[in-house]
Image (tube, rainbow, N blue to C red; front, side, top):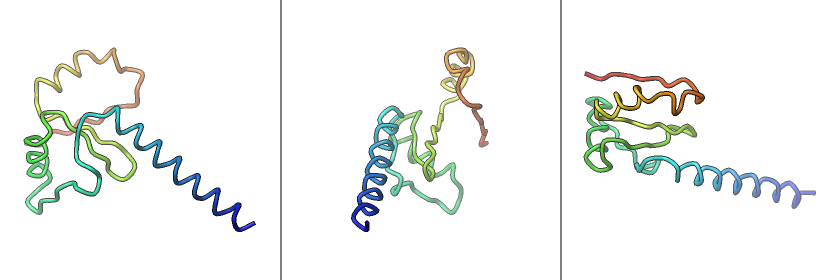
Length: 98
């Protein structure tokens, strides 16, 4: 009985990790979850260092949810102008940092 429970737990963990890897492949490049820089002066400073390393569009995981950051105004404008491409997706929250 114990071996059955351990096997089920092991398979659940493996399936979760494989699923997360497959989702991460479809995202823009970005840091691994454990290497997201933290800056006490503000998150925009950490995002600027990520932008310099990965480009104007990058992604990272916050917990189990992927976050995509767009650091160029023109890229954000283009995405908003062509919204019919992804209009069936969940609501997008846009935050401006000045």
